[in-house]
Image 1 (cartoon, rainbow, N blue to C red):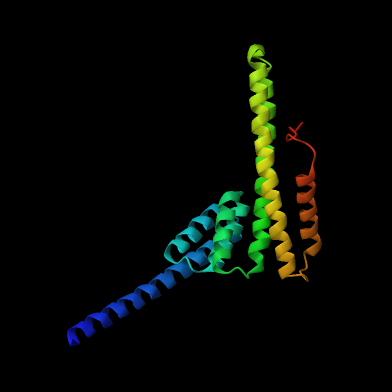
Image 2: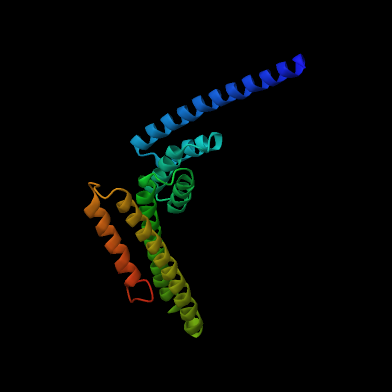
Length: 200
């Protein structure tokens, strides 16, 4: 019995020691990530923050910082994933909803812009291949409509998250900016264009 108690106490000490080592490593990774963020090296910051989450996936601040770094790196899907992960841990942290709304809106714009560019590029190529023109035009239009619909869904989610942020922080200093972004998203959602516009 005494030997079993000794083994249990050794295991407890080992677990506590490992937890302390992990906490130190997590703190070091987060500090290094902050340095990279200040320098504008968002990719390196994301790598450190992801490593931090691999060691301790319970720190909502790390999810938030990873989301912000990913937005700045224009990795919107990664940002959305990180921010949604953080919301599962701390759903009452208002900043998650603001950043998530921004990431969703930016991803919608990226999808829409890429679809418009592809439509424009494909149209130019199809003009050189007259006999396949009709089939290619139909395919391009279908892809562009699907991209527009996906972008609209992201904008709807962005509006929901931005409004939730304003509900949680009604006296925020950047209320006008957020309301302008909400209006921009709503205008996009309500636009009658069935296809993204190719840039001139």
